Image 1 (spheres, helix red, strand yellow):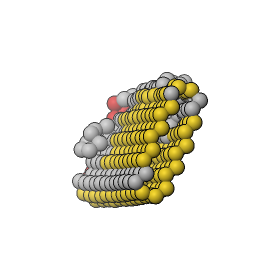
Image 2 (tube, one colour; image 1 turned 30 degrees about the vertical axis):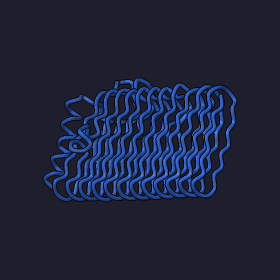
Image 3 (spheres, helix red, strand yellow; image 1 turned 120 degrees about the vertical axis):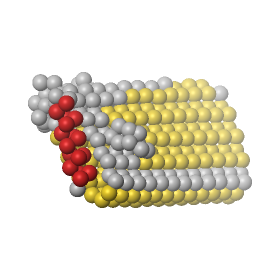
Length: 310
């Protein structure tokens, strides 16, 4: 009860210290022992009449954090905006951490950010810079999962990660992107997904991993309207994709164990499909130029394919 009252008091003090409008709302609920929470909301201008800006923190269990260890150390922190800010953190379990830092938006838009963690030892941190209409959702269910999301100067982007299992890791970085962002779903144990979308407009990969110890790494740079879908089912599959340029299309599916797919696209409007069904298959595709099409289908075990188009 003491931690609950102190957290509510902290939220109230921060709101008052920031001279924030009455539409600002902070709600904190904590149960158990060793919980900590923090919230800071800054700056609504007088012409903002909508009931905006809200931070809600719910923690049930032991040794949960919103700011501090693991998330280090934002604890919601919302900065300078004229309209529309929301951040919701809900944690249920033991030793969970959370972050959430949102920065300035000078136009009418919204921040939508939500971290939901159930289980033990989960860790999530979200950082947004100058964003408009940019919802971010992180959902983790299990033990020891880690998610990191970072957006900078983004508009209309959306990042969603969902992890079910143990020891999965997701890292998402977006810079200067608009329209939409990546979606990563992991079910199983020990899966790793790394996504970098840098100055890519209307681009964002869809990654689905089901199984154990699969690894996916994607990079999209300096492109417009790129498309990337990556699906892994099994154990120990690895996929690396790099897209640079406009209108690149990639579709990779791995079903089995220890398959390896590597794709590099530079130029414009190239298309590649890689399908691996079996085990220990290797496919490498490189496209440099414009309008190339590559289709690779591997069924069985120990197949090897190398395609170079330029």
